[in-house]
Image (tube, rainbow, N blue to C red; front, side, top):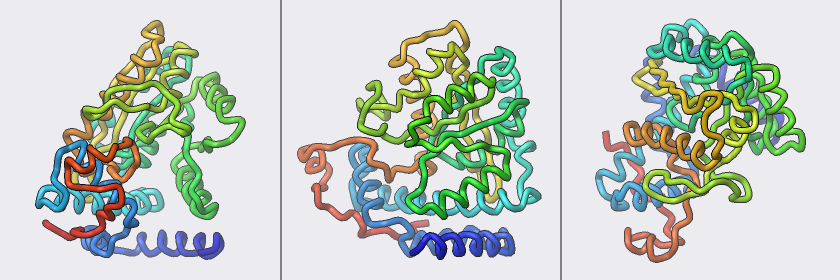
Amino acid sequence: MSDRAMGAFLYAASWLLRLLPAAAFGPLAGLLAHCRWITPRDVRLMRRNLAVVLGLPPGSPEARDLEWRCVRHQILAALETVRISFDRERLDVGTTEGFDDLRRLMAEVEGHGRGQVLVTAHLGAWELLAQSTVRAAALPVCAVAKPARSAATSLFVERMRARAGVRVIWSGRASLLRDMLSCLRRRETLIMVVDQRPDQRRGPEVDFLGRRTVFVGGPAALAAKRDCPLIAAFCIREGPFSYRLESEMLRRPGGSRDPVELSQRIAAAIERRVRVQPEQWMWNYRRWNYDAEELAAVGLGRTDSGASGMRNSS
C-alpha cells in the first residue's frame, strides 16, 4: 500500500472509530484477532516467548488462551487509544485511577529542576500514559519514538500525539542524543519505551523475566549523566475505556550512577507489571535469542510457524 493510500486509510478509520458505538469495540477487536490481525511471524515469536519464558506448552489450552488475549488486547487498546485521542469526552485521563499519584510524583521530580526521564513499556496503553503525563506535568513532555515503516503511519501517530501535547523525538537520527539532552536541559519530561531489544544489541545485561538479556541503556545513562530523576509509569487497561495508572520513583538526584544497577531497576519495574498482567504485554517481540536445545525442550523448532491454534478461547 502506498503512503498516500495508507494515510487516507488511517484517517478514514479514525473517523469511523469516532462514529462506532463504544459497545462495539470489544466484538470488533475479537473479530480482528480471530482474523489474525498480526502476522504469522508475530504469532511465532509470541508462541516461542510464552513457551520458553512462561513455560506454557505450545498448543495447550493455557497457551492458546493467553495468545488470544494478547492479540485481542493489542487491538482493543489501539482502537480505544485512537478513539480517546480524537474524542476527549470518551475518557478524561485526569479522572483515571492513579492520576493523582502520578501528578504528585511529577511535581516532586519537576521540583528538582533537572529534567526527568520517565520509562515505560509496551504494556497496557502506553500512548494514553503519555497523554496522562502531559496532564500531570507542569512542564512540556517529549517522547522518543521509533518511526513506522510507512511515513504516513508515522505522520498519523505524530499528529495524534501532538493533539495530546506530546512532542515526538524520532529515534535513528544523528541528532537523537542532542535532542534528548536538550529536552532535559529545558527541565522537561523525556518519555522512553524501553522493553524492546536495543539496536545493535548494545546495552547493559540484566535479569528480565527469569533470563539474562541485553537492555536499552539510554535511560540509565541519561539519568546518571544529568543526575536527574528516573521514574517508571504504566497505564493498565481495566475494562472498556477504563484504565489505571501506576508510577514509581526509581532514582532521585544524588542516587546511584551505575548504569547496570539503574537498568536492572527499570527491568524489575516492568517485570512486576508483566507478571500481573501478562496479556497486556507485547510478547511478539524478539526480546530473547533461543538456541535449538531450548526450543526443542518445549516442542518447538527454529522453523515452527506457530500460527496454528489461534482462536477465541473465551
